[in-house]
Amino acid sequence: MRERLKAVGTPRVAALALFAIFLALYLALGARLFVASSALDLFYGDGPRVVHDMTSLSGPHFRLRPHPLFIGLTAPLGSFLAGFIGVPWMAAVMLTAAAAASCVGLLFALLVFSPINT
Image 1 (cartoon, rainbow, N blue to C red):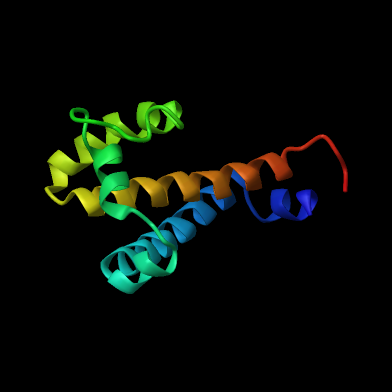
Image 2 (cartoon, rainbow, N blue to C red; image 1 turned 45 degrees about the vertical axis):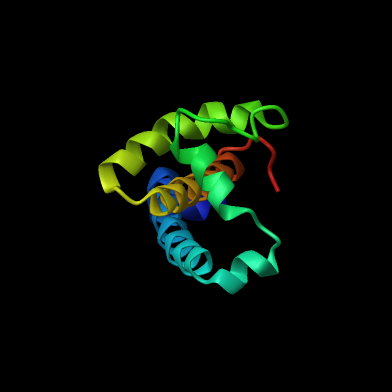
């Protein structure tokens, strides 16, 4: 597979294409699931609290004790996006979609550049 990817084009372009595809997919699905109130009930989620934790630098952060990295990694960029866009829940969806799409792109790049021949 590695030889075929190198023959077709650089693996970086393929990883970026996967990132773009999954970013669009996760943005569309995330916005739909967050807006639908039944989706929050389905997953027993606490959406407003998580959105506040992701998009606000002030106030009580209830996830700080169990997940300190969650607040440290998402709050600075999330608060910037929320201030720029003006809609905190959409900023949280965009941040989550970008993180998930980055994981897909990085996993693809790791598998392509892996020294293990499969």
